[in-house]
Image (tube, rainbow, N blue to C red; front, side, top):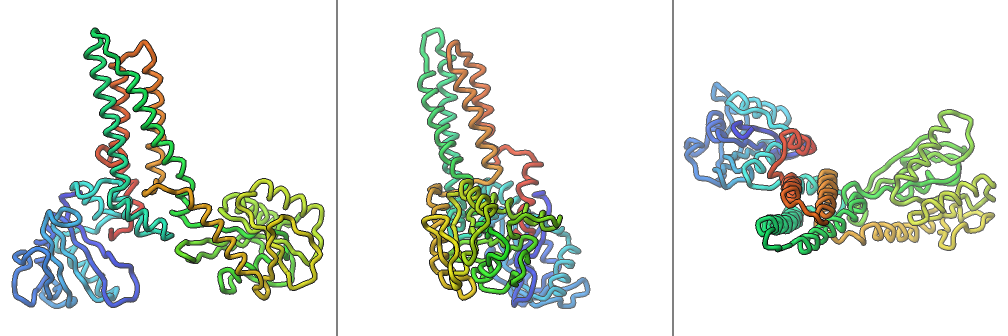
Length: 452
């Protein structure tokens, strides 16, 4: 609530030189003045705004809890729009706990997830889509997402929404004019239909990139799929650069899915080593194989690993061809064990010959993976990212516009059209947070960390 003064640690927990604590609220200056002793002997409430002040946080008896710096910022020239005091303490968990407890004693309460940003939204410092961009920025999993989150924070998505709102307001004005001048036979419905079509096209265009945008938000999933003992785990270890998966000569060693994440060329990759594909009577192995198929379906890129040192069975050939037919666009076929005499013909014209054991061919594979990743991102031209909330609201708006367009066929009931246009404008307001329920605000900000 805006009337409360809140406190939280803004820097990550763990070892480090300095921790930052933030206090924000109408009474932030008074609360901190109760536990602050400045080396200048001034009262913290009297120091100038946007000044850094050396001193100590003291307990009720005046004993020093820690030597700190107080950054004092007066409302409304702050991130939250309220008085803010930021305190740099030594990054020791016992010190941090004692300082926060002292601030709580002086009248603050613990901040909830994203509550500082929520204060900024409620005070008109940010709209909701810019607030969401901050969370995207913090959790960016690629350089692409980082860049687009920064653009969104600058207002790229807010401006786009504003153009939609402006168009709908113009359509609404034409609707009112058509109603007012009905007896004079002034019909603006053709213009309204054209403008509605333009708005719908803009929404359709940006929604079309939603699935691709999830690659930016969540990173790229790469699944290694193939028969038992084809060398998937060896290749998995070679790609991540460490011994994560168990590698033996025993068929079926990997009986479950193993994941590892790494950053490469500005993109977060999740590599998945799956259980070998084969007919298995063991219930546990059957579950592992089922998960392998599931991972192939969910993956953005599939590495189909084949043991080229032996001739594949008819069953394997059937499975591989089915995978190629289903996931052709995202599969890279690999003939592994190229260090041994080849017994297997290439399953695809662009098959990569590789030896995971001695890493021969690994550079070619990494280059092919990079090409696939580039293909995933190439269609994303939007300077902003849609999250699930945006996508659902835009889908709802799209349906409402389609309904309005059908209502513009004669005979036209302009009062009813005006009602539905107002409903569409309400949906746009929910995007920016101008009109949004408390429950929806809670849903948005629970995804934030406590200190933001």
